[in-house]
Image (cartoon, rainbow, N blue to C red; front, side, top):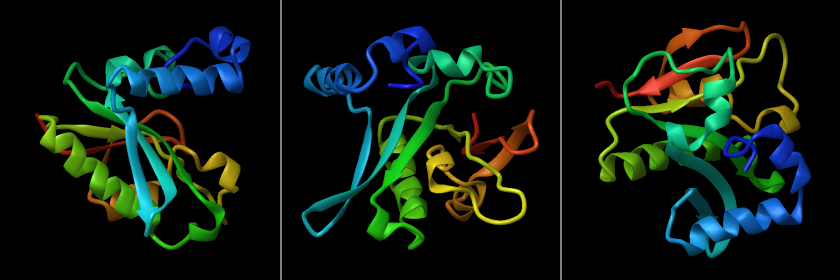
Amino acid sequence: MWWRLGRAEFERQKGEENRLALKALVERGEVPGILAYVGSEPVGWCAIAPRETYPALARSRILKPVDAEPVRSVTCFFVAKPFRRQGLTVELLRSTLRFARERGASIVEGYPTEPGEGRVQDAFAYTGIASAFRAAGFSEVARRSPTRPIMRSGSA
């Protein structure tokens, strides 16, 4: 819910209330992302929705829109600890592209971290890592910060 709410609202309903808000979206029939399974165990998550669903992106000077094209935005990931560093994020991205295209999206955009020297701490990789986006076929379209490229797959 971080990207869907204003900061004060997110903080006010931090924890259980935000979890219930996400659950309410699903119960209304909205699909806020996709899950990755190993067998019957859910081990990963990727959030995707139309960009306008995420007002925090519009308020960001670094992640604000690069143009007026309609895009689906990939905003966050979660991969269970035993399944990290095995390429699951790349597979989630590829599946997310298929998911978005099946629903008519021509552009999918993401806002990963571009690590400098060394590895990014897991806690700071929730928006994805730029190399995973590249491996899934995304290209950089803008960069307003040394560590935060805006990456896209597809074009209008």
